[in-house]
Figure (cartoon, rainbow, N blue to C red):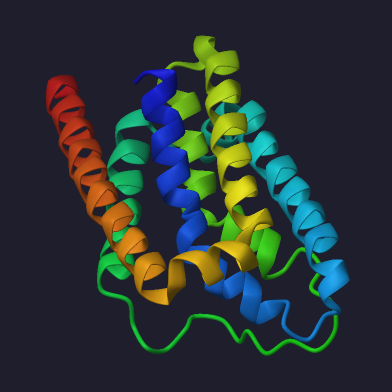
Length: 196
């Protein structure tokens, strides 16, 4: 995996275009002048969480006695399920977005930016080649910056692009993520077969 492909994978998993409607819904009861400050704070918290998984991922895997092949297959399955939901979204959301007051950590930082899929992807990337940790750090920061810019400009982007274009972009990202998920599944199974 290259820095570019790792960045693309993380960007698809974070799904900034799919998160625009969620962010705007959660922030609708907050003063508009506070929106951008809250978005920056939540993005920084999410980055901190993902950095913990990047730098202590190997220790977590060893403590849980999880093999690289198992993580690759599990990551592929998880990404596949997330991608299917991106392509075929359900009408019922997984979270109650009608929150009272200003959001803090939940639900914007976790799980919408640093969700289980993003954490698993960071673990997967860093566990395959831990000696390239600083390249993976670069990929994570790039994906986070791109996602952050999109979410920071979310209200303007929604006005310019409209809900239909945002939905189309999310579904396109889901299709690409399905291909990546299938490749991860095949890689994990192939590596497991070689160890037998």
